Image 1 (cartoon, rainbow, N blue to C red):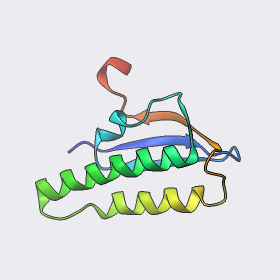
Image 2 (tube, helix red, strand yellow):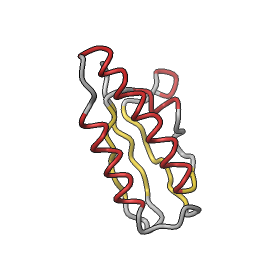
Image 3 (tube, helix red, strand yellow):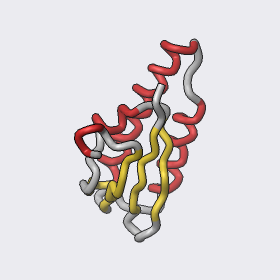
Image 4 (cartoon, rainbow, N blue to C red):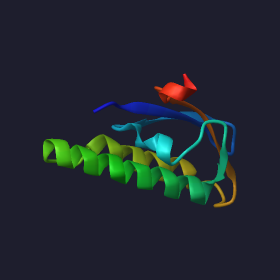
Length: 99
């Protein structure tokens, strides 16, 4: 199962790399897009839930790293307003047509 990272810029200008055990993040976020905190959190946690379900189906247990990424997102977005922007800087690996 391929894994990936998503680099984001938070509303205060700081950046983070977020881990996903699956490339499913490409289905929910776009590189270069900016999302309000609330929408970004919803999109990312939905994708990470799907990724964790895929790990469960393949290995018989949920992905604790996906859960840790959800916690990281909640912790890092807590200081911001739900409408503040989060920018998706990069996703690695990119999808083949993005490469």
